[in-house]
Image (cartoon, rainbow, N blue to C red; front, side):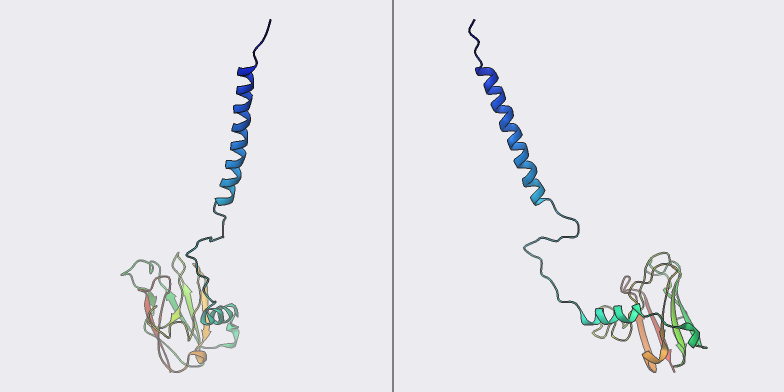
Length: 169
C-alpha cells in the first residue's frame, strides 16, 4: 500500500504557521499595550516644574509646632462643603491677631485645600499660602505672622466655588 502524506503535511504546515502568527501577534500587542504610569503620545508636552508648587509643597511639608502659640484660630471646612451651594468654611470671615496660629480643619469627608487668592484665575493664587490636599479629618496650620496684616481671601483648589476670608490685625 502506498500512503499519501499530503493532507498530514498541509495540516502540520498550517498549524506551524498559526503558532508562528500567534507568537508574532502576542509580541506586537505587548509592544503597543499602554503601560501604567507611562504617557506615550505624540501630543505630550512635558511641562517644567512650577516654582510656586515646589515652594508650597516644601512649606506644607514642614509641620508647625502648635505648642508655641497661645492664640489659635480654627477655620473648619464644613461637612458637605464639596456640594456647591452649601456653606464652605466656618467661621467666615475669620479674624486673628498676628501672633495667632491659623488652622484649617477638614470636617468634610472629601479632600480640600486652603489656598490664598480669590480663585484659580487670580495671578497671586497660592503665593501667600497653599495647604496642598487636606484629607478628611486632617488639618493644615500656618502662623498668622507669615500672612501679614490685612484681609486675605482663600479658596479650595479642588472645589473653586468654595471661598473664605481671614483678617489679620
